[in-house]
Length: 163
Image (tube, rainbow, N blue to C red; front, top):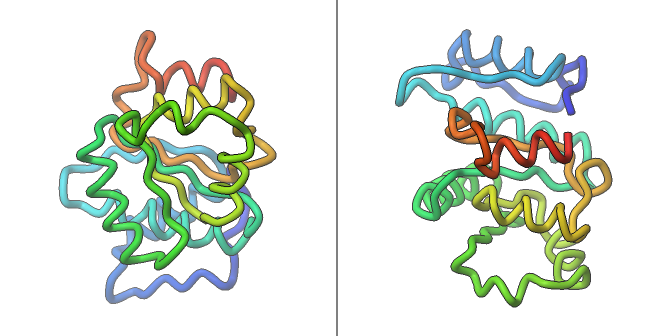
């Protein structure tokens, strides 16, 4: 889901964005990348800049931010909402999973939000049931804590079954 060019509308404030962050952001437009940096080094900042660019580039699709735990999802939703006000949804298995059965509900979510933050199992279930389509509905997926993409974990299943 990578594109070869950085959209001209994406502002990269040099006083806030470090050189290596800009470099990684630019690489993410050329190909899919894995960012492995120390805690506190700005991985989330890179992801947010990439999400902002994708929202501008593909306004009718959503960006999906995955995190392996509900707590981490809640934290990341707060950070993303501060950077991208409005249009950020949070869904977890604790969000009344029976309520998330049906294409109509998902269509409403996808049409009113630009970013969805969820645990990977939520996205995996939505993809498997056909409520969400990788190419039609989603323009970008961020896998936070990507080292969880092993064996039968949902991250790995998403990649194997739908990418």
